Length: 56
Image (cartoon, rainbow, N blue to C red; front, side, top):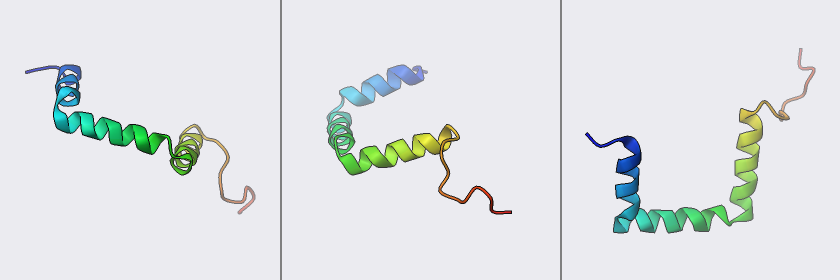
């Protein structure tokens, strides 16, 4: 069985994989999507929360 990396490389070299890669690149250039990604990363890193700090 092929390794995961080999399977990903095979997919990305296929026509469907190339189309999806171009679509992902286009979406990544969108400022709104960049802001969403930054917010998600901040939450995953334990960044600033959108909830009040003294809720209790």
